[in-house]
Image (cartoon, rainbow, N blue to C red; front, side, top):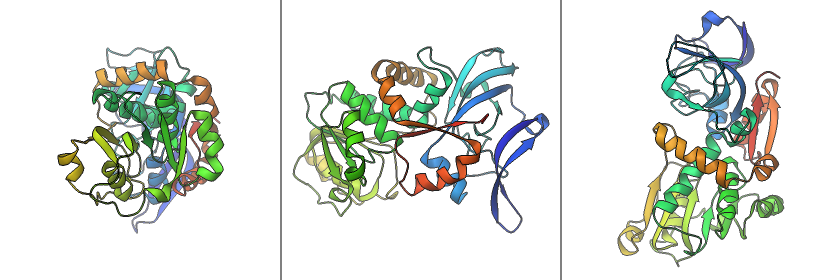
Length: 329
């Protein structure tokens, strides 16, 4: 037997969720069985739990796009019982049962070794959000955006990706401009993470000019839509903006002018299907460049019984930083 937070849908399309006791035979037929210690709550998980479609593609579904735990059994020669592993992406929690359960069945290619620098809880405090933030930082570096280049803006700065991005950039010596709809209440928190300047969400959320006054050397955007268009229009020549979210919308109501007249790069970040080498690079850099004291300060731990309320809260923009789920609690 194992315990899972299970999303269900009846023949009339009515959705429900419950913490359910399942048999091992209910697990998907996959070669590696993992005893899960922790999962996380991400924005995408909130969408899956509260709204279902289009995130959830099969029913019933165990949500959770992240997990950390220990291999129990393996028919994949790459993994052996006792191996500490993490999973981020690969459509887990969307098309395949995910991490909000005490056991999970995974393909071997989806697994990443648990980094030596982290406990399983700390790895989930990083989770997809922190891993995505690191991919964004790598994109800026690969486009020659250095601390000497100028300010870097981070949108949704009090959220999971944003909090980790602010902390990493500050650790690396960047001047960080933190944009948040909660900067008045979360300003102290963001400054503790390393933000140099705080700006309100509304400064970037309206219609963008084709070319705005240059303000940023680069950006990490979790919001999309008008916010992303504004950042791009205000990015200096040869700057780079890493886009990884769509909380405001999937549209990009902007102009090609910054790309043509200023040679700005818009770098799309998709953490779901990155190859093992890129994942290893990101996790190695996280271990080096993310202050674990700051990581602990931005992280709260909940149990499976708290997941539904937390999912609604993350969609309402009421969650600060990272939420780790102790699936055994």
